[in-house]
Length: 154
Image 1 (cartoon, one colour):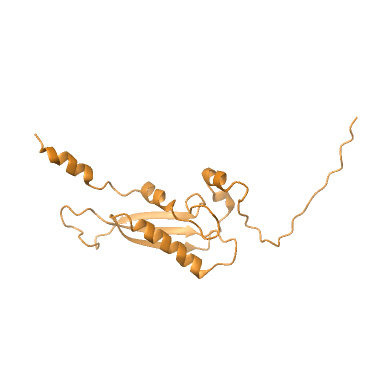
Image 2 (image 1 turned 90 degrees about the vertical axis):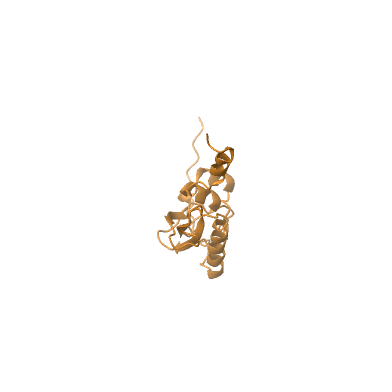
């Protein structure tokens, strides 16, 4: 018969770190320009989780495995790029993922290509943004208005 505390101890061991865990945490990180989290904005281009054999405690029995997380973001730049905004976004992500004891290091790469577009926003994000959906068009872009003759009522 197993020791009564053995079940309790196995339940306390951390589960395997998954992409879903990382994406859920990244929903707490917001783009500096658009009031929506980076996941619902569709900024997460790629995400990779790999074991970190060089993390402190690696290979010691009882120490949970630690992972490196690599994230590539496609930036939703409505205005000119700002180094301070980029730095702020990277810091948000790194600080949020530092809360996981199984994450040893987070690397964030900011991509200028492929270009982000509003079509990448999730359905939930569209609901949250409502009529404040961003546009890729510059603010001074021309808008063409077409008029149609009124229909004759008979």
